[in-house]
Length: 307
Image 1 (cartoon, rainbow, N blue to C red):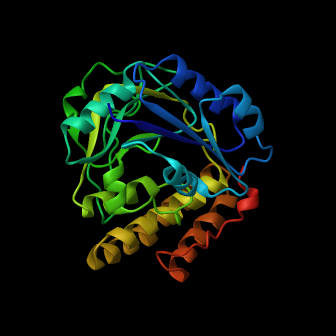
Image 2: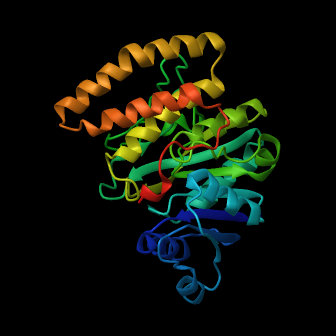
């Protein structure tokens, strides 16, 4: 039986992380587990309390917020499993989740990554994710299959290769990480898992979804549904993703599309929603991409303001 390393990152939401740990330990049929929690620079260090409360869990503390990828990469460096299962701390397990994903990996050596079906925790019959379409590199748009739909099994036939995994729950083959590299850290938040998928594809692996495996997601606990943080990084990283993964021609068309269509449309939306302050962060996102390399570690956003 292959060991699975479950890795999750905590940032200022200890109660949410504890609910996940209780879920893993109380509602999981797969026993060959290693659980790793990375505390990503929380204002109050929860690790001393956790060590006493969860003696079988491995805890790692970073004194600074390293972002989604940076926190998970710390976990990778400590993990011993043949498969690494990255889950948001705001998720809840189902009994056969891990076992079903492990079977996918065991039976399909070409699969470098696999995500389960994701449903919303507060509306457990509503889908959040049932796979992704391929990326349109001219617009940086992709379709999430099933989102906001009642799950009637209408997407269960999609089990197999998909466009992208979902960052809230993704099992990754250790061998694939060795070949493709760690998760790219210069995104900090959003799009890093999609870029990682592109790295995996270039290394010769396929991206899978398993519609028999189910996890529940408490969406937007950490960031909120709309914020300056989200507007900045969603726009900055959308552009960055195309810069890193698109062809020269695709990048040129995308830039024209983003400047001529996306930017005025977003600004109009900010005006209607009385959110003028977001315009500044949209323009900062564009400027960052015009003045920084695709591997730049400069975030362009004050990390001390990230909550």
